Image 1: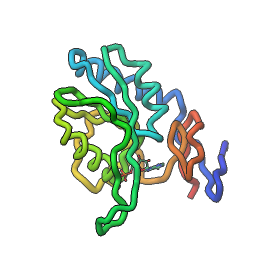
Image 2: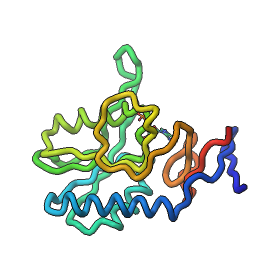
Image 3: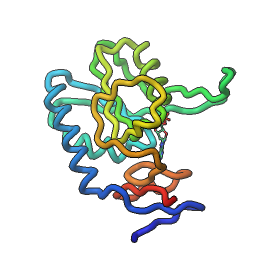
Length: 178
Ligand code: IMP
């Protein structure tokens, strides 16, 4: 088996590039159908979603724009210590159809925070497109409009996703060897 080693962890092949692309194309077609006349603004959440965003955009045929943002952690004064803040959005989204493009929804807390921040900017509507979701780990109630793949609870890398900064370049997705 084609295992890869990243630092202290071993990963094994999980989802092949061709299978990923099939699902990305399906999601793009759903968006092409649903948002044909909405001229959506895609907001891609870096770093993890760069590959998904690039492939998704290539399958889109409707008029649309894309912008890249980050949820940056900083040590806030809240009791939890870590607060995430949206950085990099430098255009108005007021009255627009926005599609958040995310790599993976795990607990959903990052997405929840992102939604709250964007809702305050008065868009017409916000849709969520995620490459992956780990349904068993979801802690918050989220409406995920477009999901490419649902996966079990294990840690994965590749196709944009990292372990400690590494592994984003793999074309396939790998799962941790237990
Ligand atoms: P959440 O706030 O728990 O939903 O976390 C979402 C973020 O955690 C994602 O955008 C990823 O950056 C990261 N993440 C969650 N699960 C994985 C994984 O299995 N591999 C790599 N990154 C992950």
